[in-house]
Image (cartoon, rainbow over all chains, first blue to last red; front, side, top):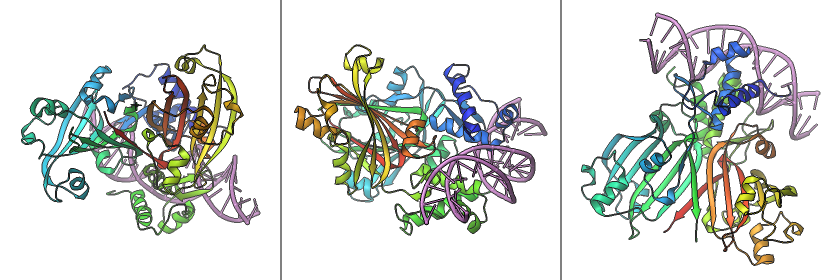
Length: 235
Length: 235
DNA sequence: CAGTGGTCTAGACCACCAG
DNA sequence: TGGTGGTCTAGACCACTGC
């Protein structure tokens, strides 16, 4: 077995995508159709498709089929641009959906970060964000409502940085970021409508006010093919 | 099919690892052994193992078996610490192996970045880096030898930042970083001794001198389970 | 050499989505 | 309701590792 069969298949679709005979968003033939055409079983087909998925060239939506991935958006955290802004600037169309919003008692980590007693209320916000109608990101945030009284009455599908600026004359300043490439936890995969266990990118972000208080702790779960992170370090 | 069989298996090993009945570096039973024990076929076993791999809990080495992953090392690029230093500080044991070193003509991207004509010589360096004897990272670097005359005579398994400091009184300063979660390209997977198509983390890093000249362009290919990236943004 | 993972066949049934 | 991907069986042979 010099080169495996799935490798040829990968190459085949890879070439179709590179030459734009398959464009972002278009649907691949069904696994069974591909199988007929190449005289291969579904196991082999799926190996090739999963590899292409890992490369970020294609993605699937549960039981709907396989699709060609759009270009990844570039996330530049140091720029402090909002999701809506940087997605728009790159020629895509962002949208946001609120999945949950509630007052919650702070757990240990959140309490420690926000310097409040464990169990004190924080605002929990759970959102799903889309690029060109494709869900790409699940966001779970814990907001320090002591610093932002009345924040829960705002329209929280809006950009938070907009709300901060308008209502509180606050801006995002310092932040701590942590990135990890890992599979999406089941809850995030479900929210994104994909099978659990698929590769993803997890980000933890802690946002500080200009007085070094913790404004917000943010957990983001990205489709791994949807984003590239750029950072410029200037001492 | 309420919860799939592979899910139970995942949970089983996940629990063993969490409770430290399986410790980092230890070998899992063979796929066939697991199959006997749980009355499952290898296809199902492998689905569970691949999911655990995507989570970063286990890893494999080509035809040698599956092993429990060690804790990820934390890479803090803004600290300017060398690989050797930050790995050591976190209680692991780093090592470096030089796979190739040669003078090469600069390609377009490198030439543009280094502000030299295309085809001018640059020093290419290809290294493999280990944490506790596990290969975790392939590095391909292009070094601006105009700024570092005689660099090619140094021992290039050493920390480059050490060499810079000692021989050239230079230090790493500004850098541009780009991260992407994607599968490892075939060359990198081969060098790491793992099957192609496995998830990985790709980093492009451009290092500048204090005079904003490009000192070095660095491409890193990490095992995705081996690293977490932390960055503090302070304006 | 025996044992490991890597690849593959030829089926099957299920859960979910769309028309 | 027909078609999709998701899961799974029960095999097989190959390439490589380690003894």
